[in-house]
Image 1 (cartoon, rainbow, N blue to C red):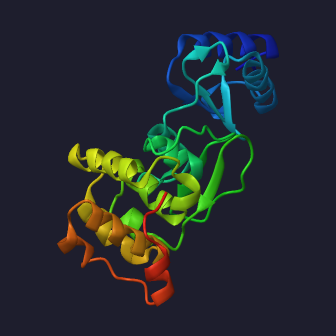
Image 2: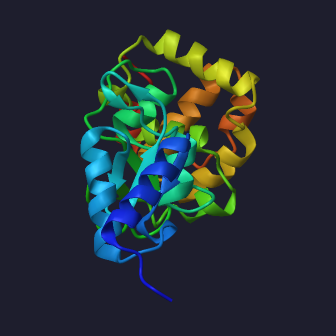
Length: 228
């Protein structure tokens, strides 16, 4: 069987990419030599037809005048991490929950495994010790909340009252489920558990707050109220 020339590889790749929308592309999705495919994908990323997510992974979404729109967090979380227990972290988490309007320079994703070596605009952070995130099959929005609780004061730019109202709306819509979140908190750091207890009380769920294991340190319990 004859091998595909670089010209035919580029033509086939271009046709398939430009016809696609809202999907990821990898070099192995195309026939031809790996070098030719990789070079063609890089050219399309530079031209704005694709968004490079990380090495060997590209996204074809909605083209805008500022470039290719990034993939939704739930799509990205599944693609670069694991099926369950993966979601946005840092400013990406606060933005996803509507607790901040700051747009991070690159997306940050927390994965419940050892994070692979990062390259490209996506930063992966390991939460390998938080095993219950995966076991409880937490959704990206639930992961985002746990991540925000790690660094509430630095990430949340709206008032505590507005933030609690926003989270309450997500709970009411079932975008965030409290029961699996409470169970998963057992493998979270003390500061996350303590802030979750404060949050549950603020949401009018004092009985649920008692089911979350408190921090052992008196100073942690005293200093981690939901302020801002």
